[in-house]
Length: 539
Image (tube, rainbow, N blue to C red; front, side, top):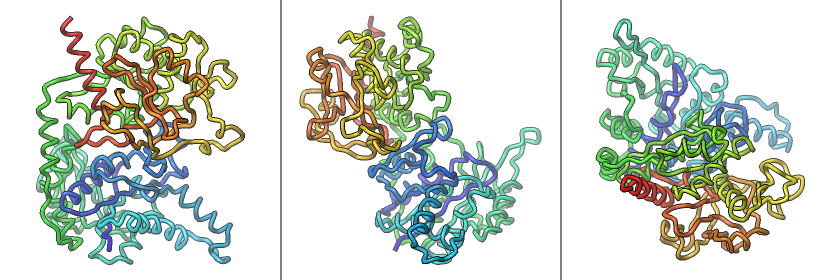
C-alpha cells in the first residue's frame, strides 16, 4: 500500500516547493523506496502545451507524450524515475474530464458539484499514479499559494485523501517564506504563522514546516513557529538558498527531513545511502575547467524557458570536469555574420534549442552558418536541428529561399515539411509527435560514438519533419543522416562529418539528462567545446 506526501506552499509563490519535493524524493529513494512524483497545477489551461514559454517556462514531456509543468523535469532529474500522464494535473484538465463524463451520462443525472465530483477527479489522479507506478511513496506538490481561490479544490481533495488513508499513511508538508528585514536585522515568522493558519482553516494541518530563507533563521524563530503552528520542533526544518540546487537533498537530510517523514509514515527502511549523490557533488565542487556555450533562442528573457537544456549543459560539465557558463543570445539580435562574429567571439560552442513560430528564425540560421563556416561546435535540438538543415540547404545546396512550411507554407524549397499523413485540416496538436520513439543509429557517426549503441529511445515534441524530397541531394552534398526511425522513413538526426561536434537532433535529449548521468549528446558536445577552447588558446 502506497504512502502519500503532500507539499503545499505559503506566503509567496516561487519558493522552491518543487525542489523541496524533488529533494525529498531523492532522499527516500536513497532509503530503498520506490518514489513517484506529481504536480497539481491550479491554472485553467488543460495542459501547458499551448502556453508561451515566456508565461510559464518550458513544457516538459514524459515518455508517454504528456505535456507537463517544468517541475516534473526537476522530479525526474532528482529521483531518476520516468513519470507518466498521472504526474501532472491542471484545473482545466479536471473540469475537462468531469464535463466530458457529465455529457456521457457517467453521473447518472446527478447534480455535478465541486464536492464530490471535482475532488473525486483530483483524487483519482493521485491514486492512479500510485497504482500505475507501484510506488511505495507518492509525493504530490500543490501548485500556487495557499489562500489562492484556484487552489481550494486541490486542498480539499488532499484533505479527503488524508481522511481516507489515515494519519499513518499521509504526511503534509508546508513550505513557507521567512522574510528577512534588513532595517531591523531580523527574520520574521508572522507570515509563516498566518499561512499555516490559512491552511488549517481548510482542514489541512501540516506535519512538517519547511522554512525558505537565504540564511539560517535561528533557533528562536524555529521554536516560535513550532509553538504557534502546532508542529513538533524537529519538524520545523530550514531550506536555505544554496550555490547549487543539487545540494538541497544533503541540506534537507542534515536537517532531518527524511528521518521525520519516515517516522511519520511508519516506514521500516534503512538510513539513506547518499554515496552516489555525494560523489556527484564532489565532482561539481572540484571542477578545474571552464567553457562558454552560446544559447541562441527567442525566449532568452526567461531562462526557465530552456530549463532542461540549461541543466543538461551543467550535467555534461560535471562529467567533463568543467564549469559551463551560458551566454544568452537573443536570435533577433543576429541579423548577419558580422553580428555573429561579435556575439560568438568568446564562446566555445553554440546550441540552438527548440521553439515554435517564425520570430527569430533568420538569426538562428545566421548562428548555424557561423558555426559551420568557423568549425564551432554546434548542437541543434528540435527546431535547432531544422535550422541546421535549412542553413545547409541555403548555403551549401544554394537554395536561397530554403525554409520550413511552418514559416513559409507556399515556399518553393521547404526542406522541413509536414509528412504526407499529417496533411489536411487537423486540429492543432493533432499532428504532434509527442513522447518516446525509437531511433536507429548509423554506425561510424558522432551519434554512434556518443551513444555506443545501435538503437536508442528519445522523447519528441514537434510537428514538422525533414523533407525526404531533399534527402539524397543533401547526402550527396555531405550532410550525414546519422539517425532515422527504424523503418528509415523519418530523419531523426543529422551531422557534418569531420567535425568534433556539429549535430542536429529532432528529439529532445534534454528531457532524459540526469545530474549523476549526463546525456551522451550533451556530454559529447561539451567535450567538443572544451577541445575547441583548447585549440583557440593554442593558436
